[in-house]
Length: 191
Image (cartoon, rainbow, N blue to C red; front, side, top):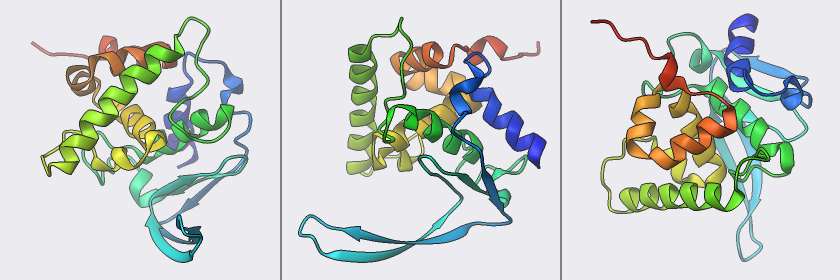
């Protein structure tokens, strides 16, 4: 279990500096999904208590929490592109420059405006598909907010690279530049 989680998480930083995960010192693994209770304020200031069942969660300056039933080898609860380990650890990368917002710290050779434009355009396209009740090739959870969009697209980037490259070629290119990897170049085909 430990080796599997570490290997999956380290796939994200394979071509990055090891210190990208310096702030991650604890991983909590539950056997199955877990329930969290939160107090949330609406726009009127009214407090709502919510209960959510989760497969994973990443805290800023805190642990990564995983459900082993969703993280174990072969588990793809939301389709072949889903990977809760990649998802939660991508949130940790996103949080390196503050709150998770879909904007991890970009490399010097990357242009922030290009990243923002490409991901915003793809996010809007997905959001519109969901609003029209159209089938989406990407997990609809990605439309929750830009942080979830980044995390879900990271899953697809590593799990079904050709799929992402076909749907959102500009986003694929930005993730390739950010992760300093090209999963498509690792694809093995048999004749």
